[in-house]
Amino acid sequence: MPRHLVYGLSLDCDRELPAPTTRRAADVRVRFTDADLGEIPAGSTLLRRVATASPDGAGSELCVWSLSGGGRRIRFGDGCDFAIDGRGATLLVRGGPTSSREDVLTYLMGPVAGHLLRVRGVPCLHAGAAEVDGRALVWVGPSGAGKSTLAAAFALADRGVIADDVVPIGIEPARVLGGQSWIKLWPAGTKVLFGSEDALPMLAPPWPKRFLEAPALGHDSVPIGAIYVLPDPSDEASPGDVAVAPLSPSDAVIRLVANSYPTSALTIEQRQDELVAFCCLATSVPVVELVGGTRSVAPGNVRDLLLRDFAGRNDLRRRE
Image 1: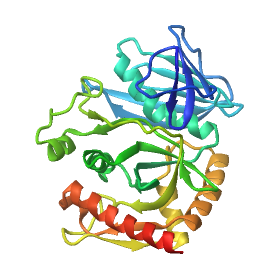
Image 2 (image 1 turned 90 degrees about the vertical axis):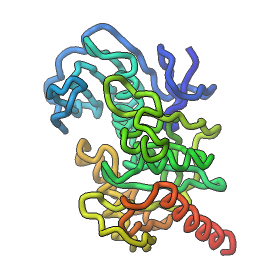
Image 3 (image 1 turned 120 degrees about the vertical axis):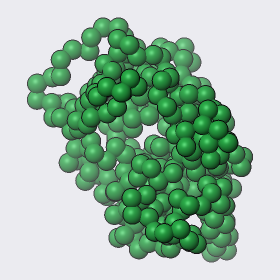
């Protein structure tokens, strides 16, 4: 089977993945199995247990354990089970009894890939990113901030979307280390951009999210030009003019840490490493926040505001 490029990693997988192929040597060996992955090893630490909704409306749990040696075990409520070794070199995948191929790939190409990157020491942001004039325009924000809707707006303007939801970051120099070509949209976002909630195919029926496949970029990493912090939808200001405001390096680090991925399932050592990485990032690239009621502004208008600000920063950089 060909190797696939996912979030900057070359995956040697025994199944076809919805990702571009690569001739690079494999970074990670991914194997699907029907065999039980076994009990959670003694001495493991439960990092996260969260109730999640299942397609039939029943409750379920997502659990993440840190294994001795630095690995991860990730078990979803539908029975899908993933085991990452301590070096992040091997990933075992076992589907649940009722899970579809789309279910498993949604987990693998999203949250599981985020955990795999963190095991390998790669800091990640809960963010989206697009390539503009050879540099990465990155936007971060909590769930519900409109990151994926903004990614789709960039795609509709023929801007190269690098990643949606999980953005792996390289430090010194600051760069986005690649992504994947799925943009995952809630029905409301699909309707805003495409006129109908069912204008796009479903990601993994009967889950409600839709997906837009953006063209894959042909290179592994893109230098970061600027990072934009989207407002938290729970405390966003009243509708009005939207503007950008610079953040001090210390405030920028706080915002980056708050929007890391997966922020609720990191070990103490990973949080320490992340803080060092984000301190370097905040002092090497501009980090600015959007102020105003962006939820009332069309995604295309938010995109155009970011593009204008980004172009000005790129012009200034070229003159320096």
